[in-house]
Length: 447
Ligand code: XLS
Ligand code: NI
Ligand code: NI
Image 1 (tube, rainbow, N blue to C red):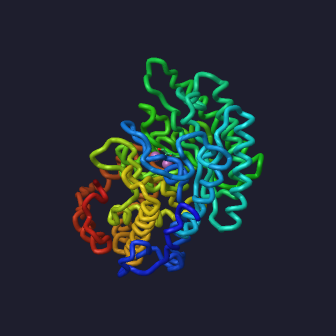
Image 2: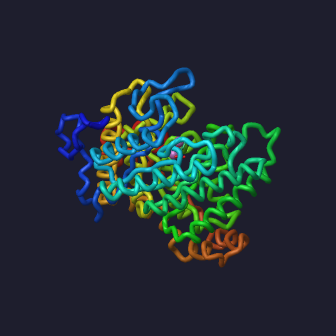
Image 3: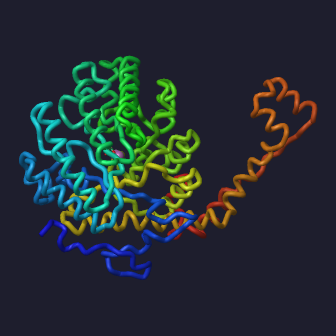
């Protein structure tokens, strides 16, 4: 008997299926553009939203009655009940991956020694679950934001003793991630930012976190972990201003501390929109800098200015995201982690199943659409053609650095050129995409 006993194994039954416990588009072995859907999407269920969050909000207590969080201390026994339930859901959904923070899975602790013991204890049990079920770890991470000690940040804390605590958690979780065969390690700077500039030495804090990231990378190499280290950009929440606000900001940070070959980004859809960017903009930017690592899949609410972490449900929007992901070469070590939670009124075990079924079906349909856009080729050749003059001798001379500003200027005088504007054909392209992205174009692209 487990919490998910009434949930059947979810199988692909095709678009005509009206059974809510089936996949309509996620056909894991279907091949598109030379890879199976499972290989393209590499999706993952996260521990924290589905198994830890009790359904509370700032106005009210938890609404979920999960057998493993009766509102008291998490004992070894409860941690194990949760572990069994989690892997039961993973298997029923047929997900290839999961993700967790150290504190999501382990029993509660009251000292640094107990932290280490409890983490290692659950890691051993988890290793057995991984080998029994074949559900693998997409990434591990350490929670450096929940405990009150981190109120003023972890690596950016004014107190180096707190930096050391963060170092302990990250070292431990990096080693556990390595031990469990994890594909990546994520650093989300939950409180690496500030609430008021009045008490903040910004330059000092950036040097601290730059140093921290370097130490993490050094340790990764020391222990032989071959997964990718990822920073997860977010502009604010919980702090007023986070240092890793978006992909472009993170790239600047990585370059400044010489880490751009070592660390990539874990882009979250809801964080992108909170930063005032579109999700596909963040993917395209990461591609441009060659730092796309993984994706935290969710969505915000256009009327709410916070991280609502809802499951994705807009196929046309996701079609553009998948298009850019695939154009950039797709995932290598990363994947689509559902960093998403059911709503507070969705209190039943089956709600967790519906949420993930819908989420992966949206991505699968978007993948089918994106593959069709790429196979059709019209969009790709339009964009290629738009820049084709840069392939000519003059364009190449500019890009290669051969010409000075004066020489480029003289070119137009000498050739007496009179270049004219050409149409960007935005509406034509929107119509083109609509042929592939079912459900209209509203909200996609330049929304
Ligand atoms: C919070 C973040 C968090 C990270 C993991 O907004 O998305 O869930 O993904 O620490
Ligand atoms: Ni996230
Ligand atoms: Ni988030």
